[in-house]
Image 1 (spheres, helix red, strand yellow):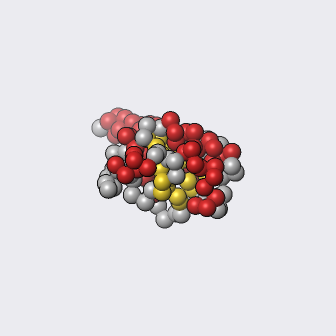
Image 2 (image 1 turned 60 degrees about the vertical axis):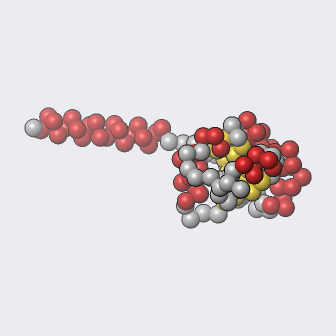
Image 3 (image 1 turned 90 degrees about the horizontal axis):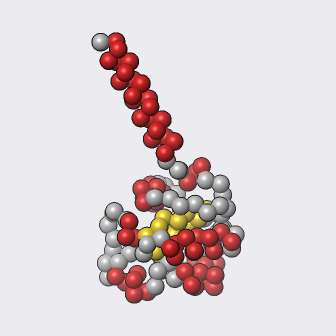
Length: 135
């Protein structure tokens, strides 16, 4: 009986360690560096009691087909000219997404080069397992 209990405890501890070290939490990412997060991490930020901006960097027609609730449309080609009007605080958490992840990476890197320090690329809406808003 003691051996079974010991084995269960060891397996539980190993499972917890695996879960802890497999997560890349935004808090552990160095400010000002490119960071790719998964949809679950993005959802945790969105559900937490923290201020953030959610940027959809697709084109208008894509945005109108469906978007994540609360997203602000700023096509990635327009970020440099318009982001300061939308987000003046360079320490604000910015979550960026597009359709598949290519444009969100470009946009996230551009935002970092403009001095924004808490930018998280959450990839594409095609991977978003939660609800989306439709026009």
